[in-house]
Amino acid sequence: MKITITGSLGNISKPLAQDLVQNGHEVTVISSSNDKQAEIETLGASATIGSVEDVAFLTQAFTGADAVYCMIPRANYFDPNLDLDAFTRTIGNNYAEAITKSGVKRVVFLSSIGAHLEKNSGIIQRYNEIEAVLNLLDVSITFMRPTSFFYNLLAYIPLIKSQGIIAANYGADRMIPWVSPNDIALAIADEIVTPLDGKKVRYVSSEELTGHETAQILGNAIGKPDLKWVLTTDEETLNGLVNVGMQPKIAEGLVEMYAGLYNGLLAADYIKNKPAVMGQTKLADYAKEFAAIYNQK
Image (cartoon, rainbow, N blue to C red; front, side, top):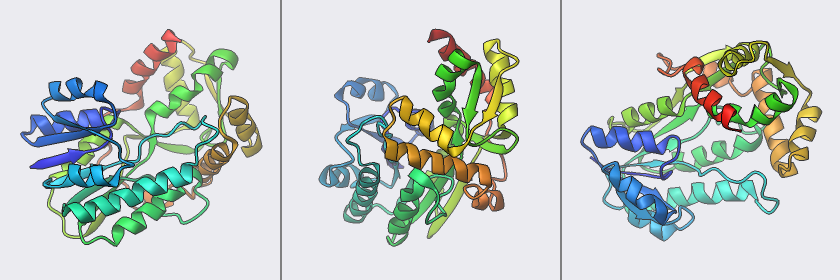
């Protein structure tokens, strides 16, 4: 198959490209950086350089593909001028237009757990909106809804070093469904080559752990077996995010999302439609990578 993927050589797109190339597919990777071209080609894929904010470029990149993988790039939450809602909405609409104009008929879109919610989901509310837009297209689409990414735990390294704890308004004694980017990549690779007629939602998760279990695994990996997960209030969490420089509006959206995870709202549809098989990578595996990064800081 001819497959075009967005996301450059990110945490999901790189292993996805590797898997697809190894299985004999003709892969084109979209990247906004000329610096990535050589590395993309080393993987055995072709590189096309441009921005997903450019509909004409996207349309050209998608034209002739049997299938495309679309994702929303990570934005800088510390940029005071970023309008996250507008950024996400624009790219989602660009994908819809480029898919239509290019004539591609098979799409995999990286959405999120909680995308079933029209409100009270914080910064991921736009994924509900994008899914609704893409649902109107006359193409076959799989909406991938991964759970909480392992690598988001890296954000707690400064707090662990300064106070010896992980503190958040979710977790603690309640379940967090975690996922490895490698497991997401494998699930996308499976979906994108599988024929589909219509629309489908697929959740991806690697392991379900409480916050306390999460802290214990990470603590053991970094030589702090007594590491604790401390539950904080929404206000305390918001103040902490703003104090480290995060844009206040985005911080509020994160806090609302975390609160939804803690009270069960965010994961309600996931609980009803869990993947039949959990991913291969467990937190104990990822903890080795976490520890290496922790020890470098």
